[in-house]
Length: 479
Image (cartoon, rainbow, N blue to C red; front, side):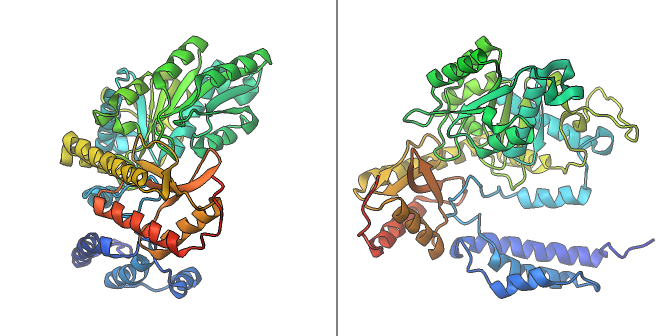
């Protein structure tokens, strides 16, 4: 038996020990590191210039290289002051679930080659559907993330509108151009999906938002009526439950009423905020998400899984299957009373066992732990917002309904605020992101990190103000 690419029992134990040492030391010391590394260009060039390897290296050498080269040249997303993006620090069991999923190497496509994985993924879809009171016939699957889930959902929505001719004729089956509607705060994955689907960005209507950055109903209704009058075919509204910049939650009930009246597909992009439905404070705003025809969720955000872990729910499983079920001769696809073939519900055949880490996290820690964690992050965002309101040199750019806080320095113009953000990131103290709202530039801190505390918020704002004082205040405020 050839064993060139396998490890001996001794090497497996050695690798497991070395992995354990790295995990323990990294998690214990991550808060003491610079958030953004001082990149070792020589080390990066060695990585880029390495020829295709001819000879083997020892397990220990590979782990040493990880510790000495990869770790120091990585951005520390798990650092308590990494608040730049909606990229959470993963729960404690995620690395172990990832390792076991890789060891099993299930392709979560056909139930015959991944029976347990199929059952676990089906259970997750069922649990997530229950959270929003989707019907039992709801279908879904774990995706790479929200961008893929949005693309998949809009594909189903397009085919639903085109009807029986969708598969054979594609968008050529449309008698009139299809138009879609979303807010001017929606994630750019919506634009990308519309482009990939061949619908054309000129047929995506970006509807203006109110002072709280929620989509406005009156311009939306007017846009739909205008398109119908001019011979186009409205087919879909994309609502957002947690916009990517400010965390705004669109008026989901009103949008659902409108879509029912107009016979439009309602897709809800809940990648950022929808799992906050676990929290009592936000459940009233998010519960109506269950009225959507489809919904994007991201377990690698507010369920604190490592990337990749997105999710798509589709209310009508038949619509989902009509879009994605292609059965070639070389596959033996058999039906089962308990398990499904996920390849018939999405574009992929090869799919990794992403569901394990999500399932493990929920079962290891339980709902109440997630509720407490989301509560704490909402409190941190509120604390930062309150501190900003108390500081005359700072101003909020938007309300903070979720865990994102957008603010700026009052006495600096847009360019000055951008320079200040760059200085904060370069300092290594914190990694914040940019915010552009209603034509004004500022800074965004998004709380999705399990290690962040009030002391970190204080450190960030104190450093922000200290660096601002060191800048030239001769630049006038344009805001």
